[in-house]
Amino acid sequence: MRALWKGAISFGLVTIPVSLYPATAREELTFRLLRKSDHSPVNYKRVAAADGKEVPWDQIVKGYEYEKGKFVILKEEDFARVDVEATQTVNIINFVSLDQVDPLLFYKPYYLEVGKGGDKAYVLLRDALVESGKIAIAMVVIRKLQHLAAVKPQKKGLMLELMHFPKELIETSEFHDPVERPVGKAEMQMAKQLIQSMTSEWKPEQYTDRYHEALEKMIEEKIKHGEEETPAPIKKKKPTKIVDLVSVLRQSIEQTQAKAMPKHSTKTRSARRKKAA
Figure 1: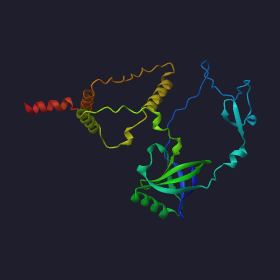
Figure 2 (figure 1 turned 180 degrees about the vertical axis):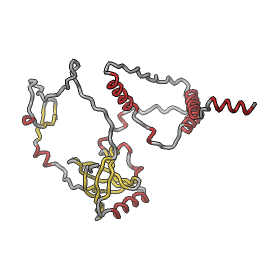
Figure 3 (figure 1 turned 135 degrees about the vertical axis):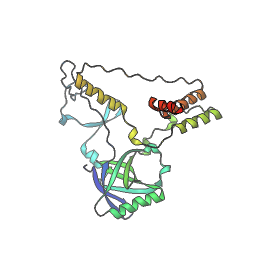
Figure 4 (figure 1 turned 45 degrees about the vertical axis):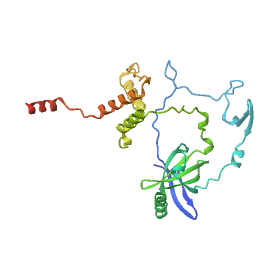
């Protein structure tokens, strides 16, 4: 895999050479828009809203609409004047406890691979973060854009996770809070029991994008049998109308326990009956 970015982690007088690699890859199926009659791909043109005429690239400028229909034009030199310095450095500003940071701020992880000659300092930073229970808050420039980021220990290495700036988060005050109604002891007990019955070890491989898989399967079927093949409709679950919360929780627990019970084969049951005889 090709590195997205090469530079260094810098904190105090310590510099650690690193390379940045994506930690995630979104699996998406891409579709083209086609003309229905002959499946010819549909292309788009840049047209002016005023007269509908096509506009060539050399006649296009960037503008910011500060009032309805009023724009201030920005040239390339204007962007250059405010461009952040691409230092190729993960510049650590400070260290904080992870539990102090709102999880909503984190949004995109990357692997930080140690560069030549940086192993000792890299391991030192990783282990110091683990033992102190801290993460590093840093600024980094990637593809001419400045980002707030966190450096965290991750298994045997370090990861960099891009963060939203705090002002980008939408305040919860904009939403209606739930009405605080008293919860009975029986309801709480049943809820805890349901949680306990559904608790298991974290196994990431068991979680898959079922929509993506079903869509891929449908496409394969259409290729194999022809596009007129119509798959069976998917049955959607209807939302449960909750009348008695305790009753619904009890039914949920019973269903969970039934799924967890091992299914004995007819052969096994027959063998037991013969033994009893």
